[in-house]
Amino acid sequence: MTLVEYFWKASQQIVMLTPNKAPNPDIEGWGSGFLLLYKGHRFLVTCDHNVHMEDDYSEGERKGIDYGVGIICNYSDPDNPLSMGLITVSGFIYYDTFDIDMPELTELKDVTFAELKNDFMLPILTNRLCGYDGSIWVHEGEPKLFINADHTADLDISKEYVITGCIRNKISGIVMNRTTTFRERITYAGTQRFGLSVLENPSNVILSDWKGLSGSPVFNEDGNLVGMLNEVVAGKQSLYVTPIKSILKLIDYYLAVDECSTNSDK
Image 1 (cartoon, rainbow, N blue to C red):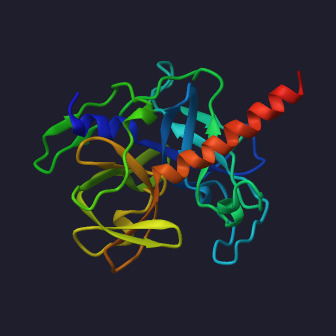
Image 2: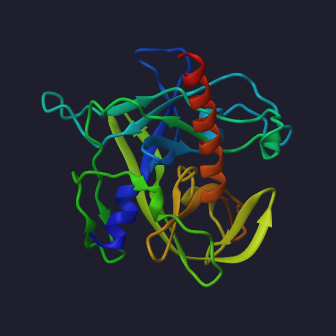
């Protein structure tokens, strides 16, 4: 597997679904995420603002509205080739309250994750990724993958970084239109702001070229996961990224609490 194939197969496209409208919710938004294998547990990781689209992050205010999340499978029912397979995911964990043992959890964190305790009912497959010259880099219909947390790294100013995913997402009638993107030559100068790492795109950001990438995994040139894309700034080169170390710290906290709860029930 080439690095390009790995990057593409490790990035998941997700949709946000109308709250409390099962079994036929509408698609309310588009985003990205990644599947993570960590300490024997499986997780879907994405930005909290994807799941809580109405929260006020500038004021740290929760609205209490949880949008549903579906992973786009790129798989259609053979009896209904126009269908779009979704794997819905619930039980997202997020942190915004004070804990004396974890004082870094005092802020509203733009990170959320859900533990995946059951096997998927549908396969998650690739959509086609083409290169700049129109050649096919990754064919459609290939299995996507979990990122093993053993293959993570800290941000390094000597490395370049890659972000992939789908943008310009739109449902036209019964057809889903989207554009694939492969962002490379992203750099890091060591800048931190609001607890996030600030990476630099080679050119100024055009929002339509990035809309739908929130929650995308960020990889270094060696193929290691270094973080997750949270936000971009229109007209500037700034890309705000949560380092993977921060994400794993939150998951560790969740696992510790879950273990204590399990032990207390015995």
